[in-house]
Length: 328
Length: 267
Image (cartoon, rainbow over all chains, first blue to last red; front, side):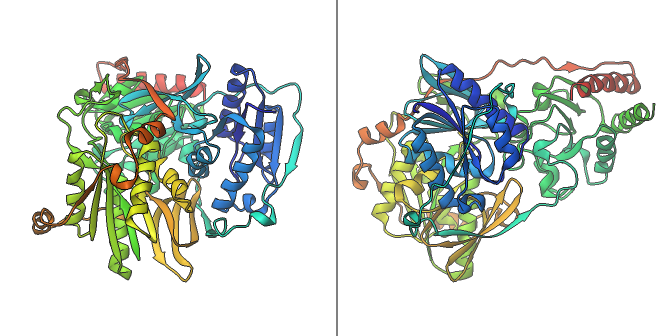
């Protein structure tokens, strides 16, 4: 087996849109290259493994304890060993922190090349080409991979899933770290503590509908109205950097280049001007709508529809409308 | 504690889309009227290094790879009182990305000597891939931690805190280590005093050529060729935002509600 497409899941992956998107991308690339699709995931991530088996020719379940714990240097060594064995022409990863950690380093160890933040992957004259937004989303770049393997991390949530195969791939249990490979480098960094953020409701990155507020709201009190609207349409609340920097909402609400990257079906931007760094956070939003008093606000260039109006005249009434719908 | 902070100069990412243009020959953004600034995450990194030095002492070296205009960001770092500043002069022609930058920075580090901490911003505001830091770690055969926003000294070396998708992690790390820094409330870049800005121009700033660090243009070009920008364009302004109209706010709201309902049906 060689020249395959390997899709890698980092430890702790849960079955969500990102997993389905990565599997979809891997399947399509393998088909386009007329080659096999191999998937690598942690042995502990059972739901993910089961889904992988329906979307691949082969699945490697990584049993190394260090993988399950995500000890960073060991994880990289394990992924390197697993990928090297497969002799891939391409390695795909998702956009989570751990994937971004390893991607470029993995490519270096495999003597290939890396490209990050891919919005699309295509094959052109046998070469892998990645399309991505650059310069804060002001431009689109198409980057060609000129070394093998091409290690690419994708905005996996934005990729379409593929239907399940009729055959289920075998899941092979593997360990790649042996006692000999316990070099000082592998233990140079050690996770001592891990905090999972207590999230009330869905994480912004996974939210399907988001109601977001910006500088134009003028203060923290208006966010109450946004929360009510969000509740009425089953949405999560977010904010621009200006609103967070002003302390109107906690920093975890921030969407943008230095905040969260979201991929909802609908993003409603209320009193948000639409600075580049904010638009970078909503690049994968399917439908963007805006409420803003300024018809020239850059946000409207990103919208499918919008309304030039003071939010005070809109948000409350919208909420009433949707509350009434729920009741009826 | 000897710290190295690598700084990247970029075109101001906040310029309006109207003023943004592509240089179709070089396949990069045209300088135009945009200011050149230090990448924000590099500034967060410098602030993190300064705070660590404030707490436990040590030395900070600032390093950049670029043409003459990049001296400005080193002067700003000197105004913030870094101890040393170095620039590796860039070749004029090729557009250099993470692959060549990491190669060059690694060669400069080898010439500069041993560091305990090597810091970079987590990604650049222009190309935004976040590959340089990890690649630098690979060239130097050092461990790497990304998305760090807090550093403390501990018995092993340092204790790092980093942001992850699901929350935070703490790592105990042996030195030396390479890390990429992200922003948080605590590492908002400090502003240099005017007096220090003026003094910075008198401080020593060393410039090296590629030859000085044991590289040549061919080696850098070869490294850069691993990936190739084949197209760069400004997307068509679709400008097809449907502005909801109506005689009254109530009418507009009703129409907006209808459009939202339509989208929600598909969710």
